[in-house]
Image (cartoon, rainbow, N blue to C red; front, side):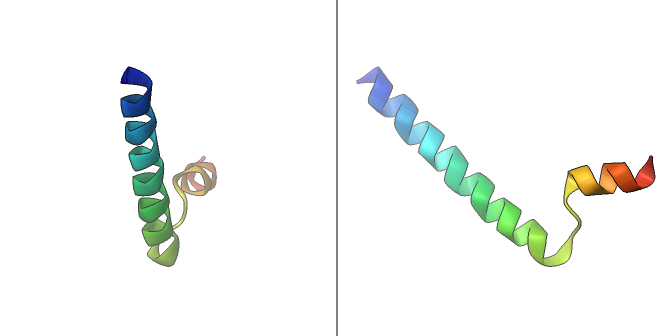
Length: 39
């Protein structure tokens, strides 16, 4: 049971990360590239 819960939480985090990444990609430079550019 605990493993199923962890899998669901992980999947939710991955989906949220993908959604945020796609939003960022439309109007902003990725954080890594931004940090490289400022150094």
